[in-house]
Image (cartoon, rainbow, N blue to C red):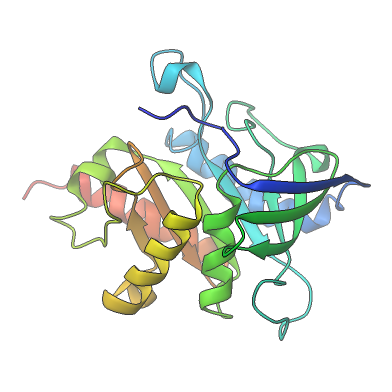
Length: 214
């Protein structure tokens, strides 16, 4: 199993002032809900004790070109914290999948899943929020729930994963379902939406479906 939280891309990071607290209030509301469901967190008995889960939201110009669609994202290895403040979020200002490069700024380095978040924002300008969580129940039931799944051969946090997400977007109903499972990333599930509530509700519905007798 690959180690959680390992940044695999070329990160050009600059220390900068944190975002405002108001700008992350919707992210923090839903991050709290997802933590209550143990979809984000840290467990000494899982993933070698590393924390898991991250959230992001798109900011800046609505018509920004692909590769330059800015987004706020929770920092690397912050999943274990009960609450985050603005010192725990970074801004990704550029995402170059072809060259495996992320440009970011803030008080903390961005999540190791930043490339995956970035490709979703590039694929659909209506996507404004992306949530990456871990759920064994959703992950294992993805085929039964008709949730698109990336190839098991594709590792997380890499250009290959970004391209795989693009493939799913083109070849499956991911554009409508707004959720997929990472076949090569144990328990990894990603949702997206125009609002935080939309992205979060998709995950809660998928989780509820796992608990419903068939």
